[in-house]
Structures are given as C-alpha cells and as structure tokens.
Amino acid sequence: MRFPPEFVDRVSEANNVVDIISQYTQLKQSGNGYMGRCPFPDHAEKTASFSVSESKQVYHCFGCKKSGNIFSFLKDYNGMNFPEAVEYLADRASIPMPLQERDQNDHYAMAQDKKKQMTKINRVANDFYRETLKRASSDHPIKAYISKRRLKPETIEEFQIGYAPMEWDLLAHHLAKQNFSTALAEEAKLIKARKEGNGHFDLFRDRLMFPILSPSGETLAFGGRIHDQGEPKYLNSPETLVFNKSKVLYGLAHTAKYIRAEDSMVIVEGYMDLVSLFQVGIRNVAASMGTALTAEHAKLIKRITTNVVVLFDGDEAGQRAAERSLPLLLAAGLYPRGLILTEAKDPDEFVMKFGVEALQKKINSAPELFNSVLHMWMSDYRGEASQKVKITDLARPIFDVIPDNRLKSLYAQEMSARMNVPMDWVRSALTSQQNRPAVREFAKPMASESEPQRPIEAPVKPLFSITGAQPAEILLLQLVLKSRANFEVMVNQQILSQINHLGIKSILEKAEQVYRQDPNKFDRLLSLLIENLDRPELLFSNSSPSSQSEFDADKENKMLQDCFKRIQQTFLKAAAKKIGLTLKQNVNPEMLKEIEDIQRNRLSLNKNVKS
Image (cartoon, rainbow, N blue to C red):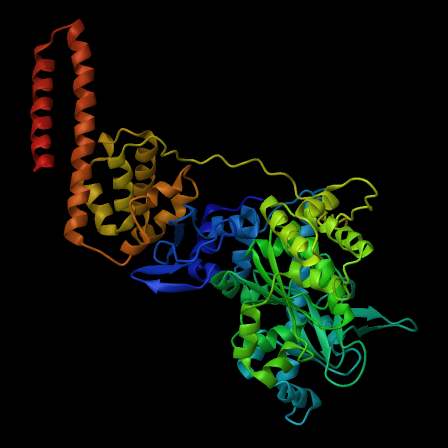
C-alpha cells in the first residue's frame, strides 16, 4: 500500500519519536536530547549510549551504530513494514487513513483489515469495562475486592483495569449501539450465541478485567478474575486472529522499558501477581497468564533481555512447570534462574508478610533454573546406579537444545559434583546414542494456520549513498543538518556546486529544496533523510554520548569554515588537473590565466587552513 507523501509527513509530524521509544527503554533528558540504554535486543549494555533527538526526530546508538527515525524504529524493533508503521502511527494520532482502491483478491490486505476491526472492537470493549468500574458504587463488591487487594487508583489507570458487569448482555448491547456487527463481536470472542433461543450473551461477567495489550498498546484480548468464590478463578479470551496466548506475555506494554533498564525479566503466573509487584516497585515483570511458557514466549523474552527469573509455586504443579520451561528458555539462548516461594502462596502475599525488599533480595539471589531442577530430580538421591542413569536421561534432552557448549560443560560439571560421578561418565552418558529415548522438540516454533502469510517485500534500495565521501563532506553534512544557522551559512556560501561526492551533493540539494519550500520543516530534515541513506551512522560518527550536552558556537563555526575550505581545495585541485590535461593538447592563454588563478586560490586556502 502506498501513501501520499503529504499524508506520511502529517503522520510523522503528529507523533514523537521520544514517546514511541520511551515505551521500550527509559530515556533521561541530556542537553538538547535524551539518553538511555539501547533497546535493541542484540546490543546488551550497562551504560547509556542510545541518543534520541526530539527536535530532529531521530535516534542513534553510539554502541551498535543503529540510527533512524520513527518509522525505522518501528520496523527494526517491532518488525513492522513501512505501511504498517504508518497505519499504526496514524491510528495513534487519530488521523483517518486515505481512501485506497483495493484488489478483491488481496487476502493479506483483507486479513489486515479484519485485524484492525478486531483491535478496534476490543478497544471499545476495554473502554466499556473501564467506565463500568468507574461508575460502580462505593459499596459494590468489586470495590471491596479492589480495596482488599490494595490496588491504587494510579495502578488501575496504568493497567486500564475494568469491570465486566454481572448482567448477561450489557456489552453485547453496547457494541451493537456502537455499530459493530454481531459476527465481529462473536469472532473477537467478546460475546457468544445462546444455545437456546435467539440473542447473545457476554463472555465475561462479574469479573475484574485486565486488557491484554500488544507492545504498541493495541487491545488484543482480556483476562477476567473472579472477585468472589467460584471457578474458574481466571478466564482468558479464547484465541482470535489477533490473540495467540503462546506468543503473548501480559504486561510488556507497561514493563518492557523497565526490563530493558534492569536487563532482567521476572516472570510470574497471573495478572494480579504482575500488577501487585509493579505497584510496590518491582517493575521488570511479565506474566504468562496462567499458561505454560512456550518457545514463542522465549523468543519474545530474548528480544528484550537474556536474563530471566521465573517464579514458581512450591507445589508439584510448580515443579512440573519449572521442568517444562527449562529447555525452552535454554534453547532460546536465555540464562534462566528459578525462584520458588515456599513461604507464601503468591508474590503479593510474600510482600505483605515480609516486605518488598525481602522479595527483591530473593529475586536477586535466585539460583540457576538448571540447578533448581536438578535439585528436584535428586530430592531422594541415594547414589544408586539406576538413579544416576535416570537423572542423565532426564537431563539429556535439555543438553540437546542448549546452543552454548560452554554452558553445557559447566552444567555437566555441576551434575558430576552433585551425583558424585566422574566427569567423563557424565559426558558419555549425555552424548551416548545407545538406548537413547526419543527427544522432544522443545524449541520447535509453532506455525499459525489461521494467519495468512505476509507477502515477501523486496528490499528498498536507499535513495542516497554517502559511502566513499571525504571526511570534510561528511562533517559538513553533519553540521548543516544539526542547526538552521549552520544550514543558512552553507546556503549563503554557495558551496554546493563545489562538492565532489554525488550522494552528498544530492542530499544537500534536496535539503535546500525542502528548506526553501518550508523553513519550518528544517528540524525534521534529518528525520526525513535518514531512512534514505545507505550508511546513516556516518551522520553521527563525530559525536559521542558525553558531548551531546556541549555546544560551542565559535568552535562549530570554525569547523564549518574549515569544511568549506577543504571542499574548495579538493574542487580547485580537480579543476586544475582537468585544465592541465587540456593544456597538454592545446596551449591556450585564457586557460593559462585560469589555471594561475586556481593555483593562487589554492595557495591562499592552504595558508588559511594551516593557520
């Protein structure tokens, strides 16, 4: 889908790259911009090297060298293509989409339309639940439950918590009034058809409602918790076109930036566990919504951090969950640790009894999940030969999926020491093919049959290449895109005709054209250009995180003048060489005078540069 350039500009101007990136990493003001830890999963760092310019609407990491604007961030971080990024940002800014003609056989586009309709009806349902909670009387049982769980108003607002009323079909009627079809509401799993007679009833009734949001804040589904006696305690939305519980972790829309800042994720079981921990200050949390962790969850985690602490119940079910999750997390290249809270039934109760500092201490000192699982396997270990074989049989499929051989070796040493057997025996037992039980494919990704395949997009060739440009030309480009004053100096200097590199010249000519049409667009020039460069990191190569807050006008003007002189030197040298070649073939008095003038100008420039 192609959008008119003026529509893309409108969408870009209505959004702020700082707001978007702040959802994924904590940014702190630094000089004229913001600094934070790089949010990209392939760049683990402990100190802030990620710079975001609000005035230019661009970002740059001084560590991994990733650069771009608001569209490239959504593409690289969230996996959106350009049309999806534009549509997301347009919806975020409440800008209506332009009318487009569509091929009736475009199944992918039709599926995308259905997804938009589904997230829209989910958003309306979410607003309905939130408003219902706000209107509930102070003596309503749901308010008593909220008070009992000590949920603060700001927490309820942060997580958009609502209430599904007790009546059978209030949401169904509300959606009908909002002109949503019954078929769409049913497909979104918000209502169900009555088995007898006509009409529909609400899927969620008399429950505290937790919307499940995508990383970009769209409402995908819901989880409802009963506030009184009854079963099930938690009721989740069934899977839909926009919700696959094996691919979603609850809370990341609120907590991803804290996880990235801590470089660690704490995984809990349910909505209330996450919300209660977030409220007391432990915010690097995600929840599995009461379901087992999957390979897709592990991939999702790795996009944010490689360090995971999984909180389990101390019962047999918790032990089984720990055993199931270990190979999945290890196969994804994560470093999992496990914590079993035997002193309380859940994290909220633990905090009530012992305080948040005690829980944070336990989280920080949680043992590696492999050691915790090995400890479970050896709970009645007596050193018998059959026990040693059984334990290695249990461990073998886990070792099969660990991608790091160093970690395998260290875990094998742990088994050798715990079981009191030679290291060579452990190695042999773990790698032997004889009597080998079938290995479960723990990390095999699950294909979604319901989701149509996205068409493969051809890579977009950059419009401008700046590879091979001289240092002075690169520095000039950096300086003139940095401030309007520098840009105006360059325009007045009339240096463009003397720039040698065609890519740099084309960029500056385009920038001048945009600037002359609308000077107010200057601040977004860098954002408009950066996505069309083959090496955008070169625009930041002479900067550093520590110098972002410094500005010396005299020094910068001197650098700018020096760029002009060096570019003129190169231009004059090339012009002299060209005339010299012509003179070899035909001596011309006018050309002799011209080359003398050029040499005189070159000498003058050399003196000025050296001085």
